[in-house]
Image 1 (tube, rainbow, N blue to C red):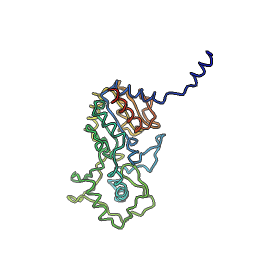
Image 2: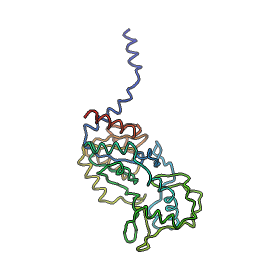
Image 3: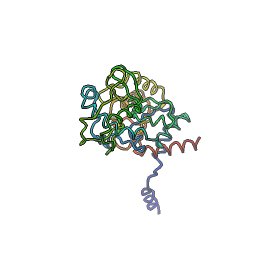
Image 4: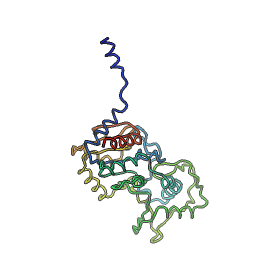
Length: 292
């Protein structure tokens, strides 16, 4: 009897709620939280992410800053793809992960949210204290005079001067991009600043471009004042996000992560949950509100 009882206990299936309970305990113990989000937070809003579970690229690498500034053909390719892909971002709606994080801010669990995304979905969900590390696709900036234009205005101009261009988007890529490997874009008309005729660039940080120092310092300051850090939906392969984990580790700030697959900071986490962030955060918020 004694041995069979021990065998039964050994074979008992693991509690599926156990990881979530650890996250709930982490959140309540280490508030207020500094939250860092990545592309995985927006995939259920219909915006693709960059990398697979092993951290490898799913798509062609994004345009590089120097190429964009120096080559007209690169700007043609970027704006042609953007014209087709941007509506997906513009029309996207926050999913339950965005809403859960906004609710966590409202009830005092989250003090600052830093996002590597450029889709504006955290603000649409009601998040107030947001630092957009890589900028926002909602705006476009002239690299000559510095004037900023609404991206919607530029979209209207793109469509108007490229009426012959096929506007059917075959496949959406991350950050308002589209895949156009086999489409002739040699006749595509690139928009220019109507004030100085300068180069227009989306007001986001391209690969090979530095994140504005003031933005980074504001994020570090918020992290230093937090009780803990939570990473949501990011592989942290890019240094601009990874550096906050390094800072937290150095300063003994505990880090939890909700991410499916590999991250660059796996060896630095206090807690890691390989769970869907929409499901995990939604249940976390519902449980915490019920407790309180």
